[in-house]
Length: 312
Image (cartoon, rainbow, N blue to C red; front, side, top):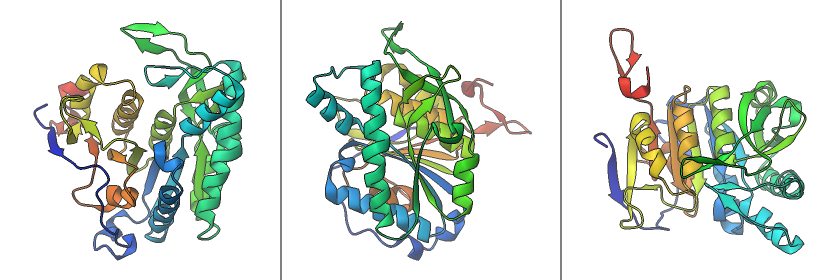
């Protein structure tokens, strides 16, 4: 990875976050869309849940247009356990039977989304909840997981193949903060469980977002896990593409989502540690932001043709 750099970090370190609207370079980002995937332990830690909601509203006050796509893995697994249903993952994706799909749908749109909308709206009438099913916002097809180079049937797991961004765009124009559950309907009428990282990536691309921020439970992409805690702080799409086949299953959909985003027009994608209070503000506004940042491959040639490593 010739252009990638890495650093050693300490989990959980933070200082008080400044108000985003007071930062000198905030004007450069005003009016731009930022898609944020919210997931991991920050969803179940009440204090982190509150600071995340504060950060989202602070982005709005600073003139950005935040869109939140949320996961709900811990809550889904907890309810599956209570119901005596199997919890299983393949290549970082939840194996989703029809019974599991009922639980996924109920937890994501009936509980997690409502809690998050409520936390944001504690600061004013900002957030509006919807799912990928609403107004055909996301259309999905069934996808397998790939294990050791072979496809594995993981049930009703979908991959987004089309986004109708009109409803979300209209909400943004009205000054609202869309909060989206990653459930999508297929053209066959089947409802699919969509990985939240990949759903956020698809929405970021369709909305022409400037940033995609993926919040998770690790500090970023480790350079040599589990032998080192050095975090790769920046790499290009081509460098990430080369690394993707060897990544641990938990990081695979996150980095796949980042790669898809920057290859379809998003200027920057980041994976940041959601366990750190106000990580979102730092991820968006810090000049030397936390976590791992993925950027498009450099352009070459008189008309800005993509480098060969970008597949052009």
